[in-house]
Amino acid sequence: MRNRVLRDETKLLRVEIELFKSESDSVIRSSLFESVVIRASKLVRNSGFTMKSFREYIRQGCPKKFRRELYSVLDDFEKEEALLANRIVRLKNRRDRVIVHMDPRFAFHPEREAENRVELEDVEAICSHLEKQVVFFSGKPLDDR
Image 1 (cartoon, rainbow, N blue to C red):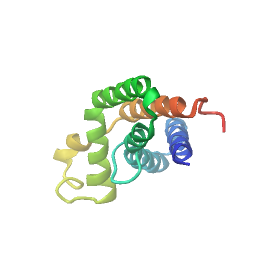
Image 2 (image 1 turned 30 degrees about the vertical axis):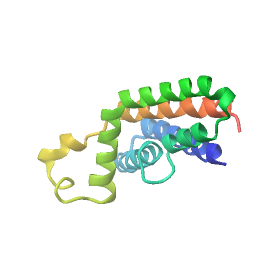
Image 3 (image 1 turned 180 degrees about the vertical axis):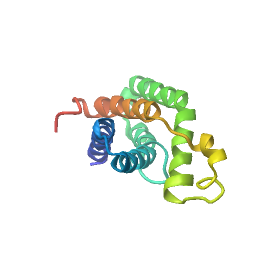
Image 4 (image 1 turned 90 degrees about the vertical axis):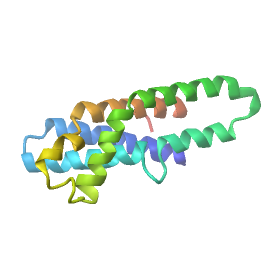
């Protein structure tokens, strides 16, 4: 069930990214981008169910005879996520400060825009990172059900 939820959410994230890239209307693009930022943020760093909490769930439930191999793969995913840390922090800041909570210290000050800027490339890198994990844990390509 948990794997399916992450799989579906990651697929939706990719669909929203592709819709954003193909859309020409600026209002729709803006809305799509905010949705992409929120969805990606929820999948990588949130108080609820994230890919990281799923990895921990798998780690805790792994039988001893498989730990060495599985822990190595899980550690690699952790290292990859650490390399994305700056992008993840910017993504989370954008979601929290500008989109969801509209923190007046950040949301309405153009001079602080750089602190909250997220580019499409940031979201695509995070989405690719999530897709690799979903494919690994499910054992099948994302386009399969």
